[in-house]
Image (cartoon, rainbow, N blue to C red):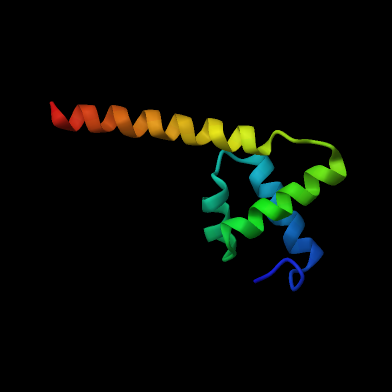
Length: 79
């Protein structure tokens, strides 16, 4: 589903989900049946209107934490 064919209400639900949860953009995309790029563009558009630019930093932090967790799990399974 493209942004153009999406209802404003659905777009807002997606943006709200990203901003109010610890979910990755890719997880939100799967949840709503859209591409990660679509979620990224929706959030970006929302931030441009609202003047916020922290979503990518937040996504990087989430991925870093997830990577650390997976590395720890991998180390534990090797011992």
